[in-house]
Length: 97
Image (cartoon, rainbow, N blue to C red; front, side):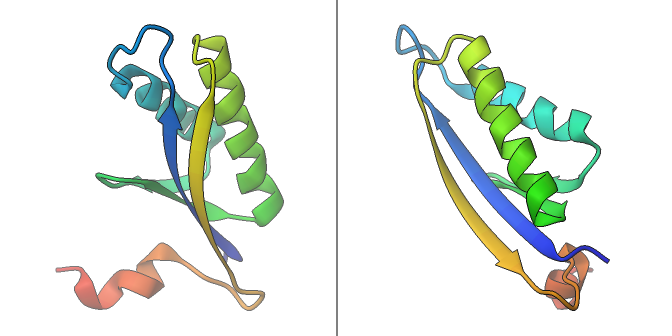
C-alpha cells in the first residue's frame, strides 16, 4: 500500500495569455506517463504512491510546462502521508456508489 497522497493544481502562465487548458492537459499527460495511480478532478489531480516518486512527477510536470512555453507555473499541492499506508479508496469509500 502507498504511503502518500499528493493533490496538485497547476496554474501555468501562458506566453500570450491564451487558454491554459492545453498546458494543464500536458501536465496531466506527465502524470499518466508516470505510471502512478491517479484521479483527475475538476480543480486538482490526486496521485497515490511514495513521496519521493510523487515529488519527482511534480518536477517533471513543471519541466514539461516550461518546455511547452509556459514562462512560469504556480502549483498548489496538498500532501497526506501515513507510514502505515493510505489510499484514495480508503479515504473516500463511504462516498462511492
